[in-house]
Length: 286
Image 1 (cartoon, rainbow, N blue to C red):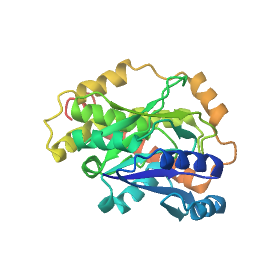
Image 2: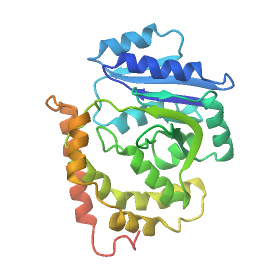
Image 3: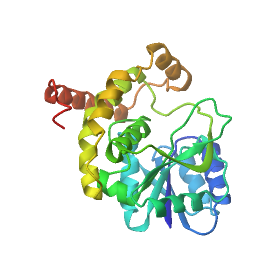
């Protein structure tokens, strides 16, 4: 199997070195694993490390900071699409805890060639973390690994929802584990606004589920509309106090850059479009 590990990184060479070195060291040797680091052109330290890390087959995508994290990841996956059967997105603040992790992924892909899978989490972690493994078949059908909405996380939650709505199946957790100890999250700010973007774009995921299922030749989803309604009406909203605490502990304090401001403006336009298209009973018409 051909697997591409995609890692966006900025200014954290120690963490980047740790996660990619452990992944490389714990490979089974049975599969072709390549690594792509996405770094910004004003971050020479990351590019220098990638160039010096001869023990790891790294491609370093260096360029201006992109508007969204998902957009950057989708661009890399598209570039490598002729040379990858699956992709995993890994941050530079985690560690791999499982030997032969790539073989575990390969067996999952063989069993479910259109699948979306998730890394397991070490039991000692206080809270769960979502790190996806996305097959090339799913990427093609969905039009990308992630959305192009968010400057930092939330895409993992969107992907988990889309899988459930498309397949009427639970998330597939694999027996390869990571440990995640989050530190400062690049471009995290205004978390309450981005939480709204996540919840209000759910209607788009309901619609997309039917398209993805058709492209994959899967049965028509039976629960997409119902799942969307349940999530919207019954999932407890994250309290503002908790969102404020997350932002205080992990958010950026420097002024927002131009790319972030562009992402926010695009998100505001998207939400306005959703409000215009939304009417009573719109879920039933999906």
